[in-house]
Length: 418
Image 1: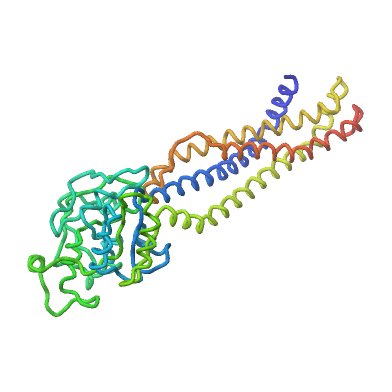
Image 2: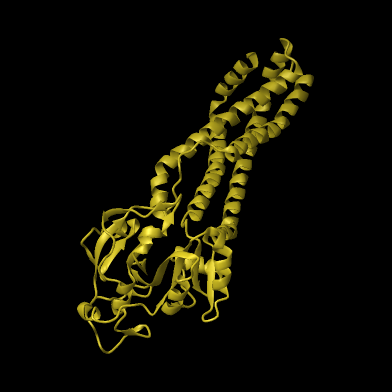
């Protein structure tokens, strides 16, 4: 207890330099814990983007590419799946349900996805959570659209508004389907997935806006919205489709049958496995951030070492007095180490406080911009291990000034000239 009081009084005497050291360590701890927490939440959000979907099927392509364009609306398909092939595969006895997806158009920077009402019934994300409507209803008519939460918020849309889709991914006057506007009939609740940034329309709606287009350009004969409805709007092809099986035990068998389908080159992927593989591919970024945070921590500990070493000369008489009144050399070592422990412990506590403070401020912004929900939760085992490692590292670093103080305490006396 006496050593603790001495350490506290000594720290108070040098509070300015030690407070800066505490701040440096706190920032390092915040970075380390923040990188770990963000990594885990981002991974959880990624892996939970789609659940309860057993297979995703598209034209022959790499698994990652198929995953990116069908789930994350990133990139484009190498080819489409013919409607006849889709119907034949969907009729397999092992398949319980399918959700067709048609991509290729956009609206003011957001991807448009054509699908059916089965999408709202079968699509799941997170822990088997279904899609729910914040306002309005699902699309019923050809020119109805249901918007993701981010689309409605960013563009200020509400139920009843009219929107114009664009051919391709770039909005331009020559590519706009101005003659066939869509009516917003529903807005989905936020999901934290790519669904939030998607404009959903029916497959018939996709066909209707392209009824007078050929080869990526408008044909000479123009048809208005009502005229388009007079045609058969059954799609000729789709981009991909999601599959739910009667029994998950059929997964690998059905996947193999689709991959070996003779009439058309096809690829079937298991979303969970492909998502995990995709995460391993991009996890290098997380490792780099963690290494950078580690260097920041090392810089903080070296700063603490420099601060302690710079004060040893000033404290030689103080240590000599302690030795004169009966303190042993080991007491001097323990005093130095105790001061270091107090500084590092304060830095760790301040770092954790900064982490949760930043969470409180940045959580809604990150969820809104990136769709990653950083949950409030207690520190897990990995994060506690990080804190213990920081403290142990500080003790190891602190042995250097402690050893120097020990050597000097054996040599110095009251007659020391300073």
